[in-house]
Amino acid sequence: MKKIFIYVTFLIVGCGSLTGEYTGADQVNVVDADSTPELEVEIHSKIEPEDKNTITEKPKAEVEVEKPSVETKIPKLFSLGGVTAKPLNGGGYILDGVANNSGDAGHAFEVKLQLKNNKKTTFTFFGSKRLGGGIDISFQKVDESVQMTIVHNKLSHTHTLKGVHPHSVDVVIDIHNDHADTHILLWKKGKDFFDNEGCTFDGGCLYNTEDFAFDVWVGVGKASGVYWGIKESEEGSIIQIKGPLDANSNA
Amino acid sequence: MQTQMLKNYFIICLCFFSCGMKGVFASGLEVSVAGDMVYQQSLSEESDAGDKVLLRGAELLFFAPTDHNFDGVISAAAHDEGGNVMFEVHEMYLASSKIIPYSNFRVGQFFLGIGRLNRFHQHDWNFTYAPRVHRDLLDNEGVFDSGLEYTLYLPTDLPLELTVGITSGFRFGHAHTAGAGPLAPTHYARMAGFYPFSSTNGVQLGFSYLGRKENNKNRMQLIGSDLTAKWRDGKFIRLLLQSEAWFRTQKNAFGEVSQQAGLYLFGEYGLSQANSIGLRVDGFKDLTKENSITNKSINQIHYGFTGQWTFHSSEFTKVRATVTHEMEMEEGVQTIDDSRFDLQFIFIMGSHPAHEF
Image (tube, rainbow over all chains, first blue to last red; front, side):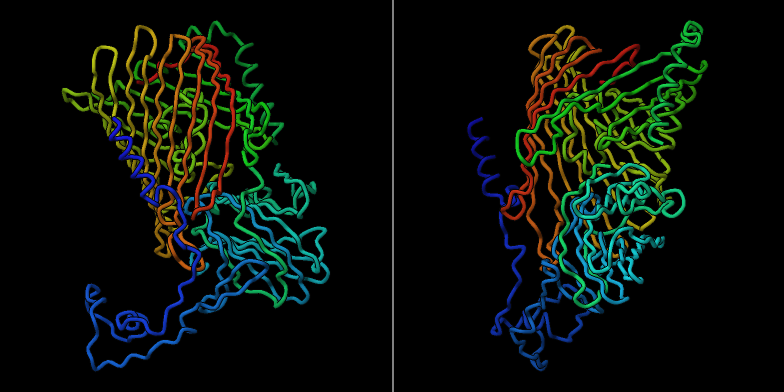
């Protein structure tokens, strides 16, 4: 028994995956310019091996490989609203942070914007690495009001946010992607988190998808991914964003 | 609408108890009403415990033979969700063990016949809260759906049963709305065997599989095992061992694969017919969580430790005191630190169906 206990203890202590220890997942790789030929080939070679199993083999000597510079290896990162953002090919940014439980979870996101012209600022939540299959929530200045559009699994709804001025959009969004149909709630930041039915109409919240469950969001289903990001934005409109946080509502 | 639901719930109760009970019972109708209340007290700053008494569930269960071939079951429950009372039908099905030899089938809405906890109502569990693996991969209480389930009792020396089921798949887990039609319905199977140590003691081992494909093209597969072993001493259970392990893999329309695994081990020792103590250890890990910026694998692990004492006044009334500590580590940072004390009161009025092993 003693031997078993010691063995299990060493197994737990020695096995980092069972302790959740730091492994450098947040460290961005900086590749030295004097990297090995194999690594250079992996990134810059135009060789298309017929067999995937041969991908680690050294290339033929006659192939010229451009020596990569350090700058090309560091991905360009930005800070958007206080969150690290990485640009995506084709436009948009993926933001730091992933949803729990492979997206089968509820999370809160805080968004603070200043909308000056009519361009949309569109966020994607619970999307794929390319921000596909997620929930797109756009904010747009229309005259002196803010119009929010939600697009989710080919269904969409545009709703004017009452009492929200385009120069000061400060909202909290709960997205419960662990429901059979994703449940989305919006509140003004600082408000209590009501989630009763009809909260959109009685002023308890800015928006609640369950208030429109039988006409707009019938059979909408869930979002596909765990990532969040920005698809498009008016320059300078994003003041502060936070997420994914613990959901505010249990509904 | 919430008030209306509560009114409907109590009108049903009132109608039943005031309208010709004698005639109703003469037909063989059995009624069971179960109450489940939990006083939650947080012991750490980050605890989710509400520091209040939560009326977790009130369940009405009706069951009876409908004729010489079939049995009917209807159960409805009211749950507290964030201060809102949600009333819903949990189960409504027609079952028969008399039509097909060595078989039992049911058609309607029911808790899916997979695993261990998922096959039992929450108030019948041997602990207060579901372990993390059950909460995340199934639901806080359990997954129920509408469809058909068939169980075959294999004609072997060792009792073996094979259960297969197919259900609509519109909903899986928590739902307030109708859900979306899936591309492949929920389909599942469980193979279980029972080995008796003696006339009163034995162990059951089961293996489960579940698959479905949602309308967003997310494909999910769940495999699990469950083990339940009991040693009786006269009228009460001297030792209970219960364990489940689950592994889930999902693939979305973009080819991104995610995998999670978890298990729990629970042991309960009967000090006497009226008192028992128990300990549960939970583990859960997201095997494919990735940093969205670096695309590197995130090292994450969740543990839960639960100690409990249960007072069994009878099979109809129990009081359970539980101390739980749940912790989660992610890349060397503790992201969850939840310690709580819970005092649970469970009572059943009326008849109650015989429990499975």
